Image 1: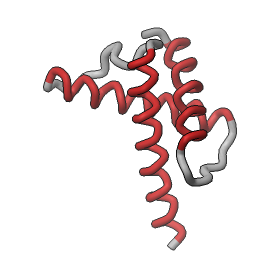
Image 2 (image 1 turned 90 degrees about the horizontal axis):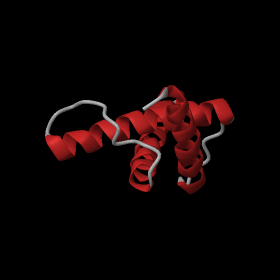
Image 3 (image 1 turned 45 degrees about the horizontal axis):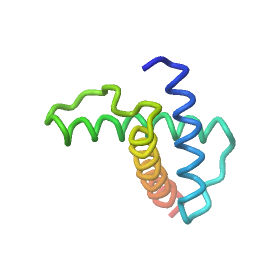
Image 4 (image 1 turned 90 degrees about the vertical axis):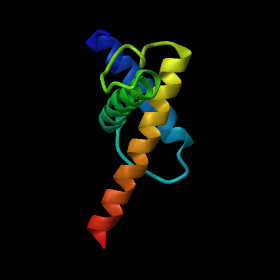
Length: 91
């Protein structure tokens, strides 16, 4: 997948994940894009691991409906983990 497609998927997945996650995350468009790109990478890699049993990043996180769904789920997981890290560092 090209870098432009990763950026578009990252913006889309990050925005959907931030809109659906129940807690306030803060951040601007750049953090949303980075969050979405990391989520797309993590979600696509885990989806491939579940399907094939090998850990590799393939085109599972593509600009298709299942690809966006996997990327959004990955971004939600990253939001959750980031919240845990942020809360533990503030305590």
